[in-house]
Image 1 (spheres, rainbow, N blue to C red):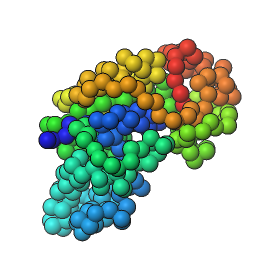
Image 2: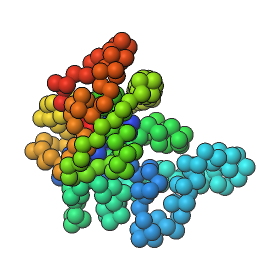
Image 3: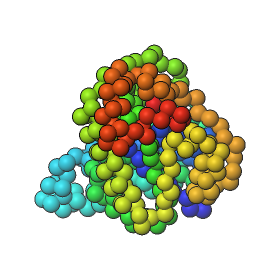
Length: 289
């Protein structure tokens, strides 16, 4: 039986790891991370046919900005590249053993299912805006794949998204199952505004790109504020039966309250409020950084 394919489409630091781990805890869902992130490709210990086709090297070149030049001057290379993404995803969606033994994302923090016997009918992975922008062939696959559902994950609070990225850069830790020490940030208003405008454009582009596909928009803040409602909506959309929520073991990287992590909080609030972003300072809205 053909599995239901889905993608979590988003930008960086939007709670996609928490969301992915949540889905992965459902017995009928096999959820992976960023399978189009070079560092997380399956290792050399994988199946022979994966290595024989030399997909790792093809993948590395595929996301090189000069690959179009190679395709133009080396026709055989172009043909190989054209076949790469469909072949790679065919393995991903149909061979659970391969992707469990070489799990592309072990950051589910003690929530990765052991490989015993699987009967998952719904299989998905995370895809970032940046990865989609880098590959014309990946965009083509999404456009042409009929059995594909897309979850557009959006984080309303761009300011917390921005701080989450700063925290990731400073600590070098993306996700953890232990509490972290408190870190304060002094923000530059111009840089914050630039990031917000950039994020708005990225979300607009993503939604326009998938407007002809079967998709649902989910806000990260809504997942946290009303988990039961969001959970039911998501499961209904991807077509799996209801299953009691099993929360991931992930912990917040920083405080919920912006006033506790922004050194120049008053300055940033004043600047952003003048630009109609006062809603970003609603401390009553549940969110984690």
